[in-house]
Amino acid sequence: MDFVETFLNWEVFQRTFPMLWKGVWNTLALAGVILTLGAVWGVIVCLIRLYAPKPFRVLAIIYIDLFRAIPILVLLVLVYFALPFIGIRLNSFTAAALALSLVFSSFTAEVFRAGIQAIPKGQLEAAEALGLPFRVTIWKVILPQALRIAIPPHTSNSVAIAKDTSLASVVAMPDLLKQATDAQALTANPTPLIVAAIMYLIVLLPAVRLVSYLERRFSNA
Image (cartoon, rainbow, N blue to C red; front, side, top):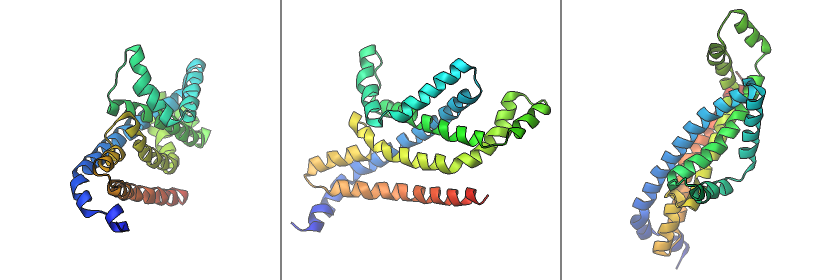
C-alpha cells in the first residue's frame, strides 16, 4: 500500500466526510461560545480586579492566577467527571464550553488589565472632572481605548483557545478531532486524521493572518 492509498485514500474520505463535516460545525459552535462567554466574563473580571473593593479584587486575582495556571486538560476532566459527584451533571458540550471559557476569561482579564493600565490616568481624572458616572466613564472612555491596545493579544489568545477546542474530545464532545479519531477507528485508515488537520488549517490560518494584520495595524496607530 503506497503513501496516497494510506494517508489520502479517496474512498475513505468519501465515507467519512459527513462525520468530519459535522465535527467542523461542532468545533465552530464550541469556539463561538467560548470566545463570546470568555471575552464578556473576562472583561467583567478585569474590572473587578481593578476597581472593586479589596476583598473582591483579591478574589479576582486568585481566579485569574488559578485558571491561567491550571492545565486545560485537567480542568476539562474535573468539570466533566468530578462535578457529578456533587450533583452537577453537564453534557460534553457544556462541560467543554465552561472549562475553556474559564481559561479564556482569565487570559482576557489580564490582556484588558494591561490595556486599561496603559491609558494615561488623566483620562479618568478628566472624566471625573466632567461629572461622568463611573459606569459611563468605563463604557465610553476607558474600554474603547483599552480595546485598541488589547485587540492584538486578545485575538492571538482567541486563536490559541480555538485550537485548544480539540481537547474537548477527551470528554467525548464530538468535535472535529473526536470525529476524525472515530472515523479512523471505523475505517482502520489515517486518512480522516489528515483531512481533519487540513480542515483545522483552513479554519485557523486566516485567523493567524488576522492576528499578524492587527498587530501591524495597531502598532502603527
